[in-house]
Image (spheres, rainbow, N blue to C red):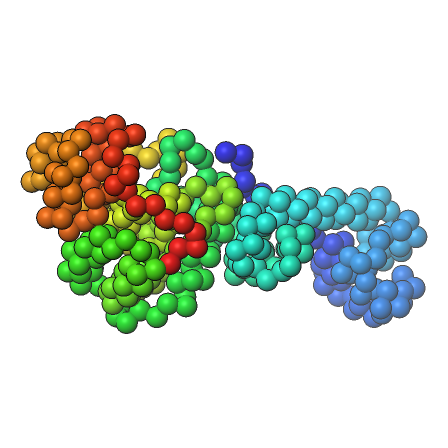
Length: 358
C-alpha cells in the first residue's frame, strides 16, 4: 500500500517574524507603517502574507527591524514554498479519497466529485485540518479497528477511513433503547442467530438492528467505496454505545452472518476496543479469537462430528441447519471453511442478496 501519511507542515508568513520583532523592540504597528511608508491596509496584507516582500520592502524592514535585504526576501520565498507544499498535500489527499463513490452514495453534498473541495471533505470527517485528520482517522483506519478482509485484497487506508466515518454518521442517527450491556447482548444472541433462517434482508435487518439497539449496539450497513475492502468493524463509540459496521460486500448469507458474529466476538472478548486486520497480520490472536467465537457460536463444537458426516448429503445439511436454527448456507460455508467440503460444492444452498440491501 502506498504511504498515505502526512508530514505536518505549517506555512508561516513573514509577518509572523515581523510581529515577533515588533514585540521584541516594543514598536507598534502604526510606527512600523510610518517607518516603511505603508498604509495600515498594506501593512496588514504584509503581515498576513497577502502581499509579497519586494526589494524595497525588504530594505525598509531591514532598516527598521534588522536582518538583511536577502533575509527578508528569502523569508518570503520560503513561505511561498511552504504554501505550495501544503496545497500539494491537500490535492494529494483529495485524490486519495474515493470521492466519486462518496458523491454517488450521498456521503458528501456536492453534485459531482470535481466539486468536492478540501472544506467539504474535512467537514465530512469532522476535522479542521489534514493534521487533525491524520491523528484521528488515519490512525483509526490503520491501527485501531479490526476488519475482516479478503487476503487477496489490500484496503486503502483513506477509503477505509471514509467508510468508517460514514458508519459513525449512520450510527449517530440510531438511538439505542439501552446502554451498551455485554450480558444483555449475550442473552439475545441465540435469538439473533435464528434470524439467519429468514431469507429476506428487508425482513431480518430491521429485527436485527432492533435487537442490537436494545443492548446498546448500533448496527449499520455501509456499502464499501472503491479501495475499501473491509467486511466489518466493531468498536465502542462511547462507553454507552457500541458499533457494529458491516459492508455486506460478499452478498451471501454465510459471509454476512459469520462477519456479524465475528464482530460480536470482538465486542464481547476484547473490551470494545477497535482493531484492524492488516494484510499479512490476519492471524493475530485477537482475530483468531473472533473467528473461533463466530464459528463455535454458529456451530457449537459438539456438532462438528455431524458436520463432517454431512459432507455432500443435502438432507443431513438441511436437518443440521434446522436443529441449530441457522441458515443452510451457514452450514455449507462452515463446511467449506473447515475443508470438509470443496468451495464449489453445495453453493446453491447459500442465499445471495443484491444492493440495495433491505
